[in-house]
Image: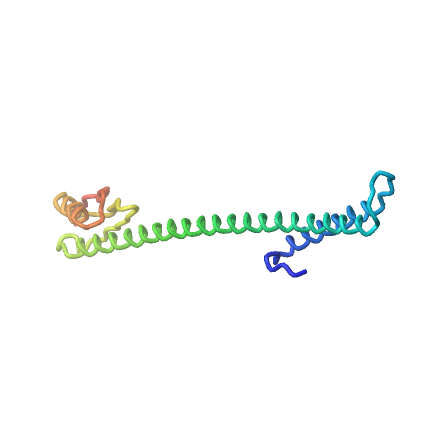
Length: 166
């Protein structure tokens, strides 16, 4: 008997085991020799075959239900993977945004004549910019902070520039 719905090896083994168990029950019923059991040997055999077939159908139904449960579990797993991919994409997007902010702040600082020759380290994490390094004057330090604050995507500026006369 071919059943296309039972393709998974574990489900086939479960179905086969149930079929064999049903057959054993049927054979046991055939050997029933009590006086009140009635019926001919053929009737007993027909009854045993029917019980065996019913056991097989019941097992096939349970195997099909197990297969559907496995499919649902796989779908849930796929949904989890999709969500993880979205979160990873958001993390990459945030990193790219931080890189863009760092580049824009650095470019803005390079345009300032007092700051362009000075080495200022710009670090960005989640839109929070940190400025490290020397500044030639308090005014240049303040301009560096203003330049950083003017860049789109900056949420805060931690100005750690040290004023050093050159």
